[in-house]
Amino acid sequence: MSCFDRRDLGLLLLRLGVGGTLAAHGTQKLFGWFGGGGVEATGAAMESMGYTPGRPSAVASGLAEAGGGTLLALGLATPAAGAAAAGGMAGASAVLAPNGWFGQNGGFELPGLLGLAAASIAVAGPGRYSLDEALGHMVNRDWMVPLAFAVATAAAVQVVGARNRRVRAAAEEAQQDD
Image (cartoon, rainbow, N blue to C red; front, side):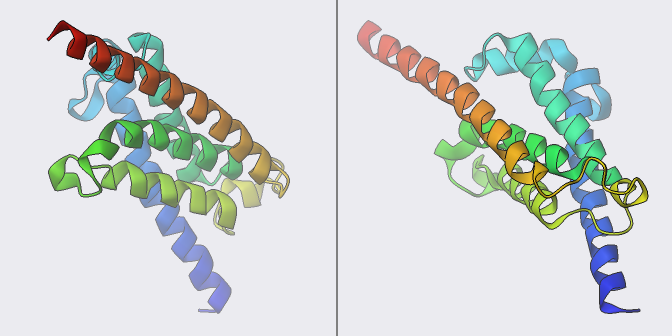
């Protein structure tokens, strides 16, 4: 087995693991699969976390995870898939960040790691064992990587910033009521 075969096999395994995990979490939000709450319950949870309106927030989050994860696993449109998944994980991390890093304390360990892995795959590329390779990299060009991350970053900054402003305002209002 050559060095390139090992690298490509490693990227395939990483894509399948990260993409599959993201896709499963996204389908929990969208369809209630794997013990998830579906759009309605996820929307209510999103509202309670400061992401409003809840239902569209749940759909956007579910699509970033399910869509980005599925595309990552397939190795298709890898820059956009990785950037979308990383942006979605930034939103999840924003909620959990006050609890620190470790998941056992309610921290952002899992979304942080999934977001970093998705971003890394987008930057590294999908490898030879991918649909991008089979299609001649039509939707996996070098210039697409910074563009995809610019769009995902702008969206994440806007969404997380608005959420953080709502959470701060609600905390200040609750403090004044005391």
